Amino acid sequence: MKTKKQIYEDVKELVEAQDKKNYLAYYKIFLDNSERTDIPTEEKEAIINKAYSKYKQQEVELYDILDHAYLDFIA
Image (cartoon, rainbow, N blue to C red; front, side, top):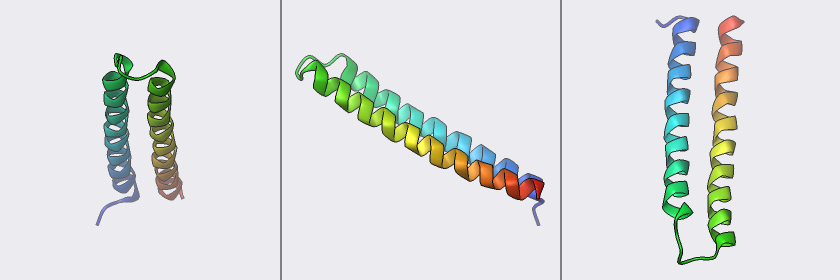
């Protein structure tokens, strides 16, 4: 059976890996759209900002999970 510390470390590893994947997905959208000339600048910025907002929302959710795992670890 895993200890609380092992569970916390596993959750931390998973959260960090998922956060990295989410950031790379955002960055791909950024790169794909930053040099586009077929749409207006405002539309490009809206696409990039929407992707960034989604990334930040996911980041908050992931680190909330990590915070709960930490609280369980120290309890």
